[in-house]
Image (cartoon, rainbow, N blue to C red; front, side, top):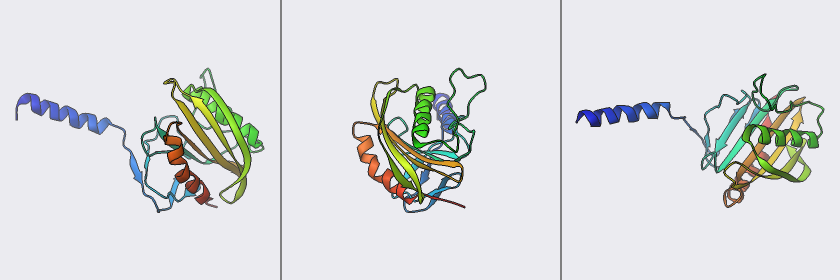
Length: 197
């Protein structure tokens, strides 16, 4: 082995060690992805590495890469807490959750989170309706938005306030193919949701 080839091998191994590590979430096995939330995925997903803005009660899953599709599971957001970690001097701040929020207020908080943390534009909600989540009365809402890459995306949020905490499943994906392809699995995951007492 030449010196150049050995050096290239060492560099590749060093880069691999620094790469974010995704972990498999197996289908058919109950998962406690976030806080007290338990779901049963019907197929395998990839659990994304935790980012510095993720809360301990948050976990992100993807099938095809976060730029194409992702689920954000929030398992018990407390009263007075935002959906992401925020710096005290940040210019734009995501509104905090309040236990007495109506579904419309939670949807506005979700929209703010997309606009502030992901620079989403053209955010438009439609189809807000009462729905069951984890055995409690909650809500579901669909939405559309665009990120800096100008690719249209669709999303769905379903969740409920349970015992003064917010339990939420957000699914967003590229509108062309990925949203419709992933939605049936996401709906089954949402239907399987339970909260540990």
